[in-house]
Amino acid sequence: MKITEVSIHQVSLPLRKPYKVSFRTYTEFEPILVRVVGDTGQTGWGEAYIPAGSTTETAASGWQFCCEQGPAMLHRGIQEAKAKIDSWVSVAPFAATAMLTALDMLASHPVLETREEYRVPLLAPVSGTTPADIEQDVERLIEAGYRTLKVKVGWEVDDDLARVSEVQRAVAGRARITMDANRGFDAAEARRFAAALDPDGIDLFEQPCEADEWEANAAAALVCPVPLMLDESIRIADDIERASQLPNVKFVKLKLKRIGGIDRARTAMQRATDLGLDVCLGDGVATDLMCWVEACTGRGFLRRAGDMNGFLKPKDSLLNEPLSFENGVLIVKPGYRPEVDLNTLKRHELRRERFTTSMVSA
Image 1 (cartoon, helix red, strand yellow):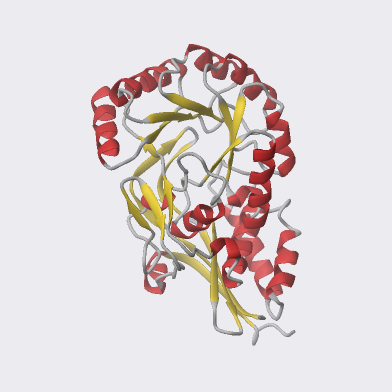
Image 2: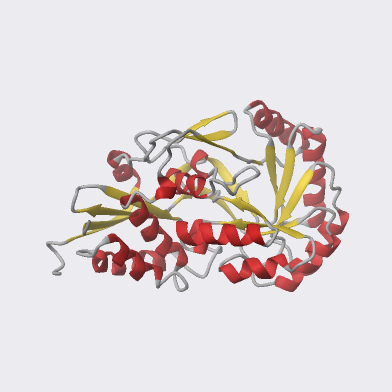
């Protein structure tokens, strides 16, 4: 199959309610979407959201990369195009992943083919800050079927500890708890928070310090009464081996857009498993497209709630048939293949570029 058309889109999807993490508050998601068309008429879609402050890539650099590489994919076979884009993963992993996943969908990658129903329990963030709001949030989420709740921390140590304690009180053993600092603490704050933590009902503490601050993250792990999980620190496969050597670091979290697509993610998850690390997967700021890809990619590796819950946050789904979800569980049905609703896409579109074989000579 040869590629005959590539289009690049950026959309703005307003959220149902603000989503707050240590370094920003999201009110909309603005992912870049890539659509590739083969000479059989079949299409594939990929996605990557590049939030400011989460990576050295930017929305502008990601857009430029896709617009430069899009025309270069035309007239090529899928594997040839994948090899070309894959060579750029170390430079632009987020943008390259959008293009790689579009090509994998076009090629009907075996990981994306679902022959029997696949169910992925998801975790959900507790957004309340006051005791009353926290109790209301916890009751609503447990009633909705969630059995793992995430508490965002990384702002002020004492306030964060108090909020975690309130969540523990409200949960009262009915669900498990994880915490995520999103790199918000410095080294001293991370150690103070970890050392003061009551471990009751808590499974793990995620990414206390900046991605490159390995010593600070390791120091927090040493005094933490629950295992540490590294997320933003895990960018290449060698980072997994480094994480496995740190005492009390028991988990790694992967995002396809950071590791570089389906094949690299599967290899990375196998390497983590072989090294005795538990694997988490998912992107809380992805739309339906990437959440579906990550759910499929994690099959066989995930033993706990997934983090691919971003698709629940926007007001509108981009898909004709949204992902199935009930009782806190994402359900991938047999034969399911997402189709983007082009009218919804157009309504939320910020910009678009389209390249065809008639525009670019072989």
